[in-house]
Length: 117
Image (tube, rainbow, N blue to C red; front, side):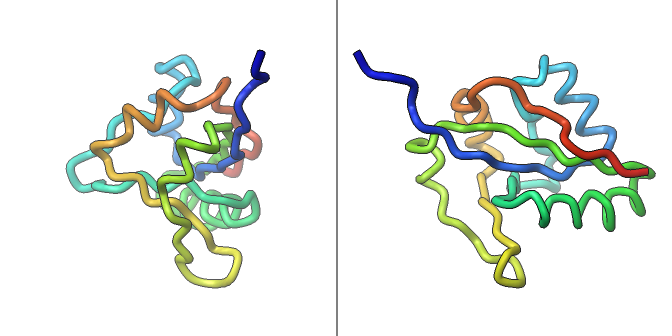
């Protein structure tokens, strides 16, 4: 009998509106993207997520949150790692049209691990 499938940890910096939608989805999925958001960007390290939540979300939304979640490693390997700046500024680019399938591969709940105001 096979054990649980390996997972990959991802982080997502988010503002209060998106976090409310995640809460409405029982902490199990990311909400659909808005028309002006064709890509969903989870990031590969906590430090990068903290910088975005603290330095960008707080300024634009009054609060910023860092979430952490696990996703099936085999599934998420289809998305190449993108370097969006410095050496540790790494993210995945998930097309908005694939978000339902992405959500179906989240293992467990999305957790809030940092909050900034």
